[in-house]
Amino acid sequence: MRLLPLFLVLALLPAGGSAWSQESDDDLATKLSNPVASLISVPLQSNYDCCIGPANGSRVVVNLQPVVPFAISDHWNVIARTILPLVQQSAPVEGTGDHFGLGDTTQSFFFSPDAAPGDLIWAIGPAFLWPTSTDEVIGSHKWGAGPTAVLLQQTHGWTFGILANHIWSYSGQRDHPNVNSTFLQPFVGYTWPDTTNLTFNTESNYDWQGQQWTVPLNLTLGHLYRFGAQPINFTIGARYYATSPDGPQWGLRFVITLLFPKGGPS
Image (cartoon, rainbow, N blue to C red):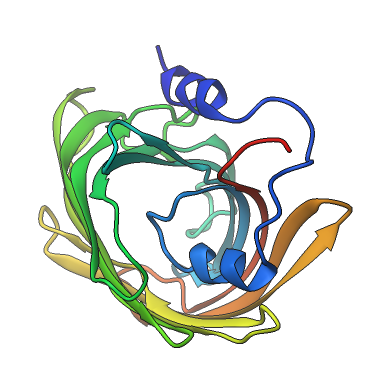
């Protein structure tokens, strides 16, 4: 049951090789800035966070984050976005020990109408929290659900928008706290004609149980390359935590994103 989100991802990913329809690299880089674009993307996002707790512990999180759109009518699409984390965390407090394993999976399904270039783009749908964690400390051990939405505008290389969700837990292990969490990700980015892309965002989370904010400020720089017919975007970045109840204080990010333009193998 815990592997359900991964099975959904694998079922929706394209089969075959990397000879995909030839969409311009500039268009692909622009679509990459849109969380609900008609573009299959498979980011592998590596995050390093430093200085957690009294022992100044560290954390490495590698997120598999496939985004898979599919049409449900002539004018409507569903975009499945999944985040499956692999976590390695050193002890934030002396004597508590290190932890390693899968974290909880977050999976969202956005319903979005087709939009012409320059139109306001929006999408709304449900988000789910799956208790896939394999470590007692890393995960919430709760089942959760709630609403999610995206609103954005793209014009002349610029992308402005916000992604948000709220998740409540409805079941799970009773000896773990309930989940009541709001996630807010406002973002602004610019993509140059040569596909270089610069993005600034926050990935803020408010824990209504503990009444605490966690607010990392992220600045990333990316560029799209082709290896044969396969487009891949490489991104590097850094972040500063404006507020975080138990740390960390700063972090680094590296992302490899495989892109599969809509249209399938040529």
